[in-house]
Image (cartoon, rainbow, N blue to C red; front, side, top):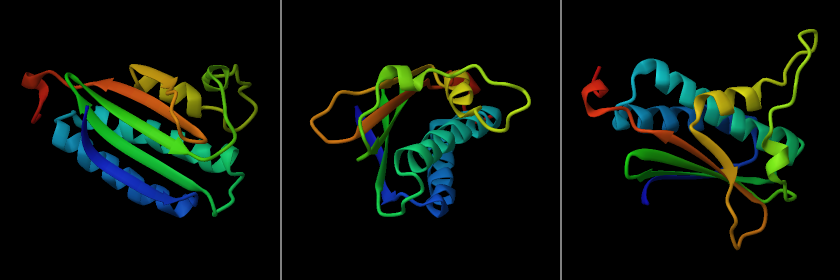
Length: 142
């Protein structure tokens, strides 16, 4: 895999704006159409926000890492943290009630990305891997 972007930041919601900008710039460079770019940015934002909200409980002393790779015909996003370990079941979108706010993050992530799973690694915490096929060459630049 070829590393395209490496972002490391504090677990603070104020960093999400910069993450969205970096993800958008990378997606533009990869040639995704605007609609896909907006959806990918939203999915990565939701994943990072979930780390901050549920992993760190809004504590700003945590760490969040985002690496963006190009791997053949797809883009691979690794979102890492130093939170308590989670399992694949924690990545399953739960049924939601229409009368309750929130709860859409995992639904959005699974809808937008081609694959979502945890990566085993030697580091403490978690690494979430999100994969998205690159657009066909003829669709790039539109």
